[in-house]
Image (cartoon, rainbow, N blue to C red; front, top):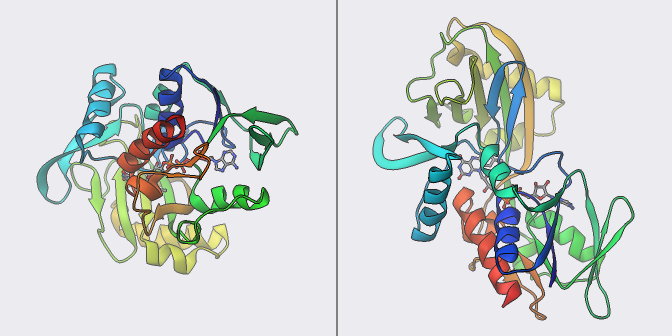
Length: 312
Ligand SMILES: Cc1cc2nc3c(=O)[nH]c(=O)nc-3n(C[C@H](O)[C@H](O)[C@H](O)COP(=O)(O)OP(=O)(O)OC[C@H]3O[C@@H](n4cnc5c(N)ncnc54)[C@H](O)[C@@H]3O)c2cc1C
């Protein structure tokens, strides 16, 4: 079968790999310039910073199976077993940043980047996906893995129903600040990650302590309330407010560059009760972290579940 997957984040890549493993002809489209979606790693001069997901955990045997393969391939490694408190549960990271997981999963797949899917319609016998270069692609199965409001807008445009409860899925936002420094004389303590350290931030990541950056670099993520309250300020205003809030954590290090990152759809607030959603025809599936868990593991498990359901 011809399968089209929309989105080369974790759920889309896992779905695509499952479809390829079952012998199907799979194309993945993503509007981004690179794979990974919310697994995002950025280079600023000599620094490397994770600016989406910071680490991931394993809660199921199925996820452990995938992670064991990634460990063997050297794509991920354990970072620590807790931050302010050690609880014994491994926190894993991409060896060269979180995007390295997505890059690994994309090997051998037909992934078309910088390609926005802007319409999905039902043909007489198949699906028609139109991309922003005006090309109409035909598929027997379609798997949508964008954040739900984005998948909904594709479906709505094509007159395709989505359950009301699913389409109302809301997401927390995240405002982030990426900072490079002249030294590691900051106040982010070992092992280089701090969860909910104050009233503004939900996470501060020390990318050098994590082992992904050759030079000092911190990632600051504002908590959902702060991000919502400040999301519509100008980038300059957000930058200045985040930098002021970050200052106590910078110690005597001098900032050499700083920039803002905005995530409109960061973390789903409510989950759909199943690992994916499939339409009545059984040929259109929706996957993502709004299904099997609002985290890396959820995206992985949902992508695989969507592929299996759509191919059943
Ligand atoms: C700031 C932040 C911090 C986080 N921290 C953690 C953490 O520490 N641990 C953890 O486990 N999880 C964390 N998460 C959550 C985790 O990143 C996500 O759960 C997971 O990456 C979601 O993967 P996904 O494939 O479902 O969606 P995405 O990664 O969002 O992938 C969807 C893809 O679809 C593409 N797309 C959308 N619309 C279209 C279109 N019309 N045409 C073509 N392509 C399209 C997008 O470009 C994107 O690449 C964090 C997320 C954020 C934003």
